[in-house]
Image (tube, rainbow, N blue to C red; front, side, top):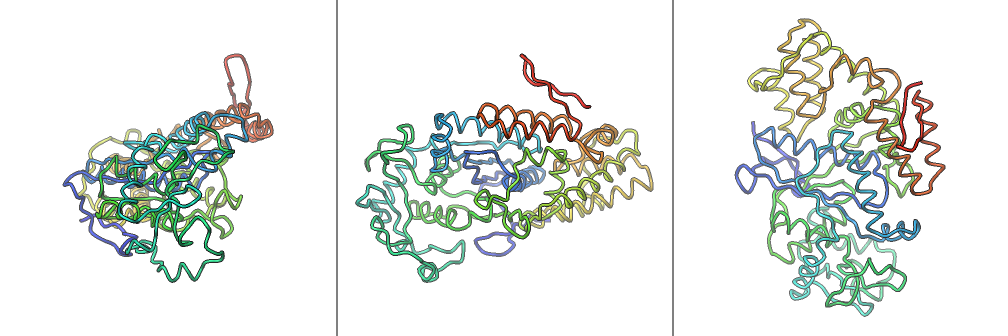
Length: 462
């Protein structure tokens, strides 16, 4: 069966074939790294973790690039508030992100470029756009993109220029020729730290957000690549602006497939830091083991909204426990190559080849678990474990999982506890002692007693 992917650009399922036979090049917009990642970020990174895993299962070599935005207004503001350098802040938050997502079984990308390492490429791209008449320098020193000079603007989001003008609420800013124009290069401001400024032909300043991804994707994957991904909230304006910049400069399509994951919702509102209704990965791991969180996310299709609640996570924990219970009935499930001609494996593959259909694939896992319960057949249990592995599931020892806090009604596994301890250390370093005390209290409520000593923090179950 041919892999089909829903392409946001064309709004339909399309057969997937990479530009270079056997090799998939994929770019995903990563984190603006000024704070701990929340469960919405985990959902995005999980979605593309599954994509790259399944592409590899399908026999492709994958070059997966997920960037880090390490220069931004929010980063500058947070670093100034904490009295530390931008690099110290972004290094700290990048390390925290790596730790959190590793606990969730999210594999690292092939490349993880940082925006600050690609400023020369950004300036080169801006220069090309200016030479082509698509960019101009305003009186305040900013360099802006002239949206109306790019004929294809709006093709990804489906927004016409007339619709966008109709939605304007403010007068044209004095530094822009048109209110739809967006900034490519921000001139330096007197109150910004020197480390947030780069020299350029346009004067001291720093890049705008959108130009960062255009430069990094082109530098690492070429002018045209196979898949560009990110959260649905990036479709407009970020990805629309990336297309305008990149295609305006090169005259070539930026990506053949555009893939977007859906929002995480709480009480029918999109989870986000701006709304204040988010839960960090570490807060969620204080109550649920990492595999339960992964399973909870994968039970929903990546393009659909994911409804976050303790009720849904409790249900996911119980369902995952049923799969491990089936595996525990067989003393030694063999680890073998998947026979894709086997009927269950065929249905699993058909589900994943239909736009990475994890809900239907998980349903096949439960079919296999039912068969293991009836037959106690080690071969069937082995297939269950092997198919689970393609999704990053069911790789723990069943007896250990069921006996640990992960399979019980409460508790964390060791990785989850380590993540919470690391979060507490970070809070103490930031002098956020209220947060450090909250983490200790949450762990204590789950029977985890922390002991601080000269060698660091240790723990034991009460």
